[in-house]
Image (tube, rainbow, N blue to C red; front, side):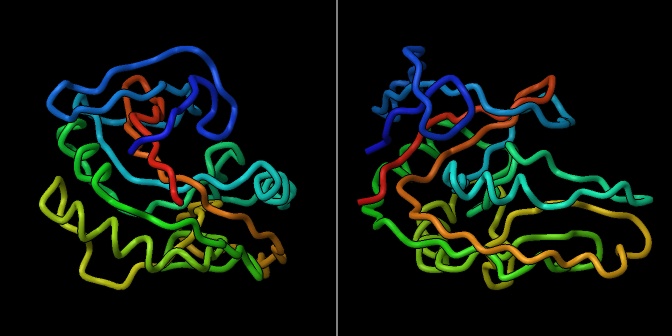
Amino acid sequence: MPASASSSRPRSRQSGARVVIPAEAGIQCQARRPPRIPYCGAVPRLFVAVWPSSEASEVLAGLPRPDLPGVRWTAPERLHVTMRFLGDCDEGEAAAALSGLRLSRTEVVLGPAVERLGRAVLVVPARGLDELAAEIISATRHIGQAPPDRPFTGHLTVARYGGRPPDGYAPPVHAAFTATEVALVRSDPPGTYRNVATFALH
């Protein structure tokens, strides 16, 4: 069943605000006030995420972010692992699908260094989430955007760039944390992330 979520940044900080998911989902959870991000479009977009622990976030916040041409750095408080991008879909349907899962806690290892992923992204690898991602993808395959036809690659996006990648940028990262919950997250105009519900891992 979904765990409570606070109205502050989507981690362990709690508040008393509550939001009720549509009745057909049969779920009640607390709202959180996540970081603001750029948003395009009027329809909310959903994804399933794992947020790093406070300790891991401190390590990530310590990464150098030099002023490099064409590089757009992700604010440390916005870093997360996307387990499944759902796109435009019904919140209640997505939450109901996730609430039926019986998921286990898992150890997540970050690093060993920042690396390129694809042609325009710098990431911190996140190992240990493959089994969890497979369960989430299976449970939500009928919802929203179809899952990509490629293996899951756990990561946190630290920067995007245009043109040539920054030369020599590969700072080491040594951090680990226990994933204790997954979050169904929604993008709202004018540019916010909001945890719709969280689901405890046992």
